[in-house]
Length: 314
Image (cartoon, rainbow, N blue to C red; front, top):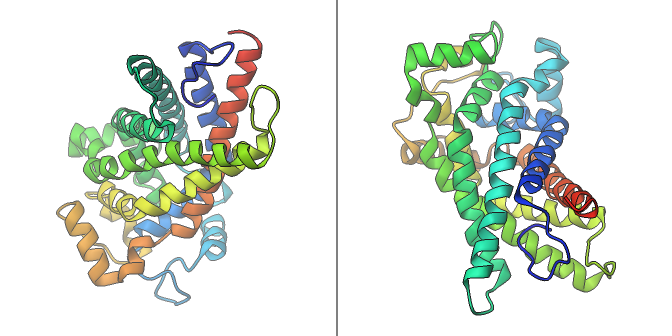
């Protein structure tokens, strides 16, 4: 169902494809938000993620228990409201634009195109559109997740109004350049790898008459696509997160050293120089676990919801 299929006996309308995208994004976010909180906390820590009294977080287990102890279990869902707005809007824009683009490309070409290549190109464009639209929610979410106690921001509305008043509207787009540079190939690879993985899975394991993969098949293929794409662009994701908290350093003082960057290149270069090559991959483990979970879930849910709408002939 992901991507236009001319031979399908019934095609789900764009409206219901958008609803499927929103639904899959929202459900996935509820389940995976704690992993996102851990990933962001690790990315924003300049000290090594090693067992040492000077380092605030050492690893997944230590960080989880410390956050729960100091900030309560609800802190694992910090920034959840803007994250849900982000996920719903992102899922709608990403899947809807991807479906429309693959349909347009398939119908406008007279020759047989490589499906994986088409999915990569359309995924790049859909990722750029979705990211540009949802960037303000991502920045607010990052700041809400990144702050400790006492809180600088009381909630989503307070964060929005404070940022506009003290830093201006453009503060919502801090880190946009590394975000777009990261998300364009990431989304393209995610859709392309998912298509490739499903083709391989279908050739190895028989599917039903409709060609529909079982839920476990979509989960496996989506997970592989998510991990592969995330690992390839991870340093850019780290740079984006660090740039998003520029001007917000006071809320980070208790977590360790503060660093100011002039831009994406300076952030990556300084991180490599001061924290080594591995510093560019801080938070990779929870990020990959999250990528496996979120990518697998969102593709599987999108497929299942789309097939439900297809069976209802919507």
